[in-house]
Length: 264
Image 1: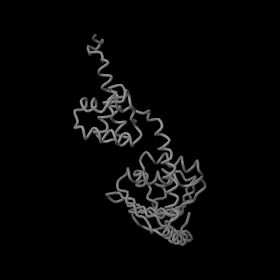
Image 2: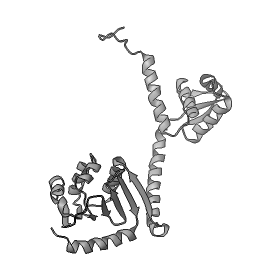
Image 3: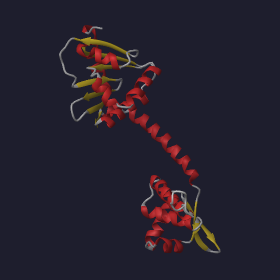
Image 4: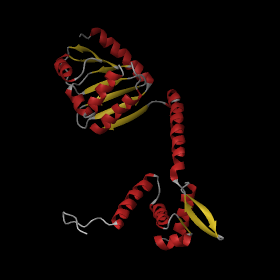
């Protein structure tokens, strides 16, 4: 049958092919190897249950490879061994039960993260380099996810439009997040950037003072409770994240000294 556009109507076979491609992506996301995926899909084609010999014929893989794949799939909880008339069959299991395992994994990761965070003073500081606008935005998205409502953080050397440009689409979400969560950003910046900053950035949550210094906007420093961002605007644009409560405390002290001499 032809459609009005003259194209052949998709057959059931083509629909099954699309389904198999989608399934392959799902299995890949579960961490299955190519051989494991081939064996899993073969079992689906055979109705979800089959002896190993039939799987070997359908996949055209070496018997040792098939048996290894079946063992791994069994260990991953995706199939089980059953016996029919004294013959061993491999039967697919509904993978829905795996969701509980992933939930438990997520809970364990969260608990482990808290333990590691509590040890941060003894394991030293951490340095992460974010290069390029996408990585830059991801660093700020991390702040937005973790900073508590009513928090205050500090900025030395606000860069105006250069910072806004690097934030890209994240900029709007950032401003909305800051206003909603009553975040305060205390800022010290160059006087000549005042019009640029206040024209394009919401000053409702920004408490800004300026120093009269003729310094180009090459860098900014963001100071949080336990980490700092050193933002470099020269190409390649780079955000250096240093997790260190001691560094944050020291830079906060320097900020307070500058705050005294800066003016609204």
